[in-house]
Length: 310
Ligand SMILES: [Mg+2]
Image 1: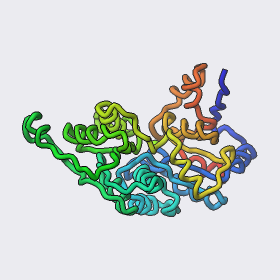
Image 2: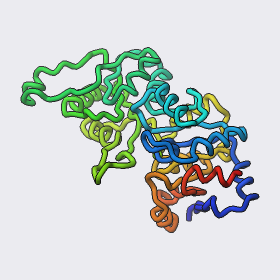
Image 3: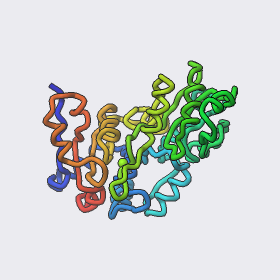
Image 4: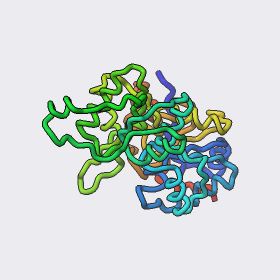
């Protein structure tokens, strides 16, 4: 039998219990999409709630699997929406992928299957990369294979969200990865984006990563949640006591699972991907893989915390 998480609705707690909850953490990691905003739409009350926690002395990190923006763009977006925020507090998977290569003293070129979010972060740490954007098959496959040129300077393949994913990109990435010394880094493995429009599913980075993983016959080093590299990076700039750390997210198989793996307290907000019915089912399960997805606390939306604090 595994430790069942309490799945407590914060809205049902007394004033004293809320105070005890707020006093129980010093560091807060928050997911962004589905918690603070949805794409370019800020959620009501979320800047005020997060800023109040900061005023109470909480150290805050913005932890996102999104790889499509440079941290400066993220910072601008968050500040424009009313969040008090500094660049050092923003942990995107594109920044961390570049940071990882820098840490291992990587000095070759990166073949990028991804977007400008990744290449701009590589630039910041002076790592060379191949051009991004469309790379299409414009002749028959045999002619292409006979003429394709691989760059001998490439020593790593970094894969993230790439709306131009194509057969030539898969072919090149897998060919580079045939060399066991070539590093294989994936930003994240989210299956889809939180919302599609009019019933359209928007495939996420995970779909791109899996396609390359399949033909490369190798597993990548994954940067994003629920893998724990993000928290290793945070530990380098901030003392973390797991029991006094809170992870807030809207998605249980990334955000909450990361919190569980790290021994953090976890808070699910219901303003994004995961719904409460699913969490209740997981809570009833005896399987550890489901139990690990169950948060300690939940709340309708982050903005509701503001009312509870005051
Ligand atoms: Mg989210």
